[in-house]
Amino acid sequence: MLLRTDFLLRDDVVFLNHGSFGACPRVILDEQRRWIDRLEHQPVLFFRQLTGLMRTAREAMADYIGARPEDLVFVTNSTFGVNVAAHAFGEMLTTGDEVLTTDHEYGACDRAWSQYCTAKGIRYIRAEIPFPAPHSDEIADIIWKKVTPLTKVLFVSHITSPTAIRLPIEELCKRARAGGIKTVIDGSHAPGHIPLDLSTLQADIYTANCHKWMCTPKGSAFLWITPELKNSIPPLVVSWGDVIPTHGDGAFVDEHEYLGTRDVSPFLTVPFAISWMKDQDWPSVQQNARYLASEAMKGLMSIPGIQAIRVNGQDPLLQMTTVLLPERTDTDHMKEWLYTEQAIEVVVHRWLGRPILRCSTHAHTSASDIERLVQAVQTYLQ
Ligand SMILES: Cc1ncc(COP(=O)(O)O)c(C=O)c1O
Image (cartoon, rainbow, N blue to C red):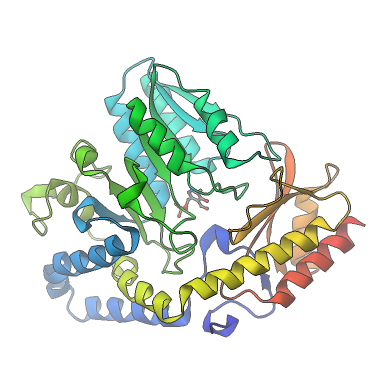
């Protein structure tokens, strides 16, 4: 069983914000260190060997998400992956075309789409998902109502960042595929958190972080593109491409994988992290974290004035849980108070004008962390 001491997290802070930047266990950081040392012992030899090493890492990643290694590349983070997609569609679409999204997207990615679309006269339309949010089927219908004959791309998160809602992407990808609309999924919160099988999803582009719920080092993420589309998507950074072909995995990998000299140790650590997750009996780690998230939900919901973010309560299957705080809450003050007075790191802010609290649970979370949070929130709001 994993313990908090398996991570580097400070023991004087109740850490309930895994969702923002993850947390990496010591053994995985040790593995990363081994890669860094190997590189620095003979950098030129290492970079000569790099294409084969990257292929091995992509094979493990692909196997974990139901994909083929030649259809994905490692990227530094999902902001980068989303930018590759938004830039490409900005080039491919024409004035008046529409990109449809939701108003629950992660700010940086939303901003990227907005900028690329505005530059090309493409309409960027945000379907409003009300909250408290309805059932998944209803969310799919709400989004779909905004589809027009001009809709060319649908960009949505698998799990939303501000509200921790699992969007019905299976249904949305199916409808989009049938309607000739390309889908770009921001799966930042999915790998290591919920099941992911790209072989059945029918998405066109899927990008996600490993450094959140898979607990890999910061700077490890992937960009997967369906074989029919991958060679139409140009890289954001033009490097050697197929002038120096990498490993016979085709132009997509050649163009997107080698982006000049950079730290590749987070990518190379992924196979170790995947087998470490297996060794930890990951389903039981997840089950325990989901239980703690549901305890947090139960405790917070018992505090007068706090409301659920879903009409029928929170999605019980996630390790992130969000609640609406009383309208009068000064969120900046509350966040500061929780950290300085109670040593609790948790997301508290106003989002779309509503005061929200988002709590994340993972292998390092304990029942006493949740009790401390509930107690502190109760004290603050009374
Ligand atoms: C839904 C979502 N998308 C994208 C990101 C950006 O992740 P990164 O900073 O690793 O690019 C986040 C980060 O929290 C997120 O929650």
